Image (cartoon, rainbow, N blue to C red; front, side):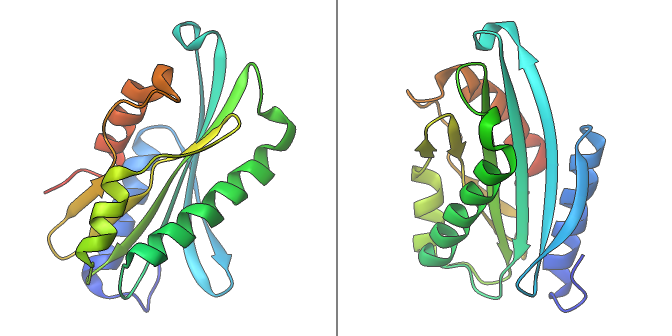
Length: 167
């Protein structure tokens, strides 16, 4: 993934890529202004989601220090990215979601707290940020049920557990 990232960060990102591929996601790495970002994508349709198609993106990047501000900014950038990618596909029968993840060997407690309390929502688009401490393998994110996007909550929880398991 990123040859300059510390070994535990690189190993976690490589493992995430493997977990995404094993789940049937398209996986690639993109350059975001010099930052290598792992991008996973899959689309699912369920009748129980009111017959909608959900475009799910997972974006994971290395960070030397994960702060609350860093995960908030990465979350907004990731949400902008998926909204732009899916454009007109959002709406009554289609939505987009993203798991923006920062993986670091140093993680501030405020970043963990921010990720565990947040689901960022826009029209037919939502993000569940993830903060990963590569040293411990701990992945912090909102894993609950939210009123907005309630139909997708169980799906999000399953995917988060599959892509970002905590040691």
